[in-house]
Amino acid sequence: MGSHLCEALVESGAGVRVMDNFSSGRVSNLAGIEDRLELFDGSVEDASMVKNACRGVDAVVHAAFPMSMRERSMETSVVVDYLAGLFNLLKEAIANHALFVFISSIAVYGDQKYVPVDENHPLEPVMLHGAMKLSGEFLCRALANSHGLKAIILRVADIYGPRNTRISVPVRFLINALQGVPLRVFGSGRQARTYTYVDDFVRAVLSALQTPSAAGMVLNIAGDQAISLYDLALLVKEVTGSDSQVILEENVAADDRRLVIDGTLAKNVLKLGRSVTIREGLIKMRDWLLQNPDFYFGGVPS
Amino acid sequence: MGSHLCEALVESGAGVRVMDNFSSGRVSNLAGIEDRLELFDGSVEDASMVKNACRGVDAVVHAAFPMSMRERSMETSVVVDYLAGLFNLLKEAIANHALFVFISSIAVYGDQKYVPVDENHPLEPVMLHGAMKLSGEFLCRALANSHGLKAIILRVADIYGPRNTRISVPVRFLINALQGVPLRVFGSGRQARTYTYVDDFVRAVLSALQTPSAAGMVLNIAGDQAISLYDLALLVKEVTGSDSQVILEENVAADDRRLVIDGTLAKNVLKLGRSVTIREGLIKMRDWLLQNPDFYFGGVPS
Image (cartoon, rainbow over all chains, first blue to last red; front, side, top):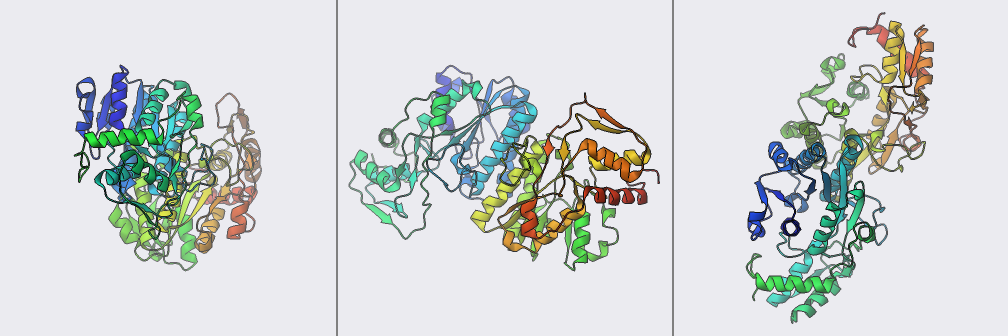
């Protein structure tokens, strides 16, 4: 996500500073733009580096999140470092009167009470990951009130795209299909996700950066279509022309939620236009995988 | 709050372990019961001490909170230490299958959208203090879902009583009245608070510890009556027989909220009976101040 955003920001002519500890990202993801941005190789817990990185900026985008927490780590230090880093950045955003774009997650909603899930849906995260994102939101909102922070909160749906560190289901299916091995769907296959192509995420952040009037708002960022995992598997087979079997592993416990996310508010506020369709996104991702067969462990045959 | 709870727990016959770094409390507050409990003199950030303190316990009450955050410190370390300590305790509660009573605050509600404020009121903390308490709540709830934590969340209203480190308004008024100096009310005087005597807080926690069926619940803990600050000043004059003037400082900016808290749910679930009235609480506090004239800086003439 970060490298795609950097590319778009550099293209737009913005002066860009990147701070990353490269715990999950790769510096090679910035290939081609590394001379056009300022890189701070370090962790956001490092308050003095954060201070330097934020000096004089107009805006801060906070997308840092420890991969290990997403993978259900229960290390106290992971929780603590996340919050320390966020708080350091929030304070520097306040000090520099910078717009703060906080990358939150639809994980803050937890189990759906109704679909599609709009921004008024109850907040009941069921995993640590969502609880920490929600804590971050409330930190932003409290500091907006008490310290004049200008913050826009973006709750992003499941993002997929090139260079994703975490292999999400669309990417796993594409790799399986290109390798000619079965696409395994766990659970009923009827569980749904609003998979969102990374370009739509980038477009939303760029627009948020140009919409300071959205400060104080919370916006879902999601593609226009939700899809069931079974239908996704069939679509992947189609766009790859693969003979891979689709196997429903109904006895395997799976997250059976229908995560249908309503991104209408962001569409209107950020003037986003239509999103990349799932078919279009899968085709882009397919082509990238074919051009970068060695990116993921295990490789993809070209 | 902690020492009162310890007294009641010891009286009830429970085995009690206390962990405190005495950054705001005083070890002398445990005078008379220190031989009947096990003291861990340290900070909840110390994971190994937390592990020892929690080994084999049936329940954990988390009331630790950095006074400096309440006083609007923006030190990253304060925010971080609070969360680290809470997370350490949550993990040990899970490991020991212990009931977890999380002391939250009505600060999670922020500005009142309606009164009285029940547990369904929107959550929009306006200060860092409330945002951190709310983060703690969501941590409890996520771990309840993902790791089987049994947690009861108590959102306590403004507590006052003997040995309060923070001199709340009822105590300040009482000290002023006993010293014969004016009682200054900032703002309109019509702002209201649901002042809650510490005994009611203690009773609620003891009952929560005996009501594991309340796990998963969020309960307001508050006295039965709200009172405006002006009326509070008059009542303090009455119970002390003081000639002190009441001065309305209407030009001084003040927190003008009417914090009228609905504690009905906790009354029912925890079978609490009627609370200490404000008059009763003020009389108890008056008597304690007269018996302990040196407790607060500046002293109170007997």
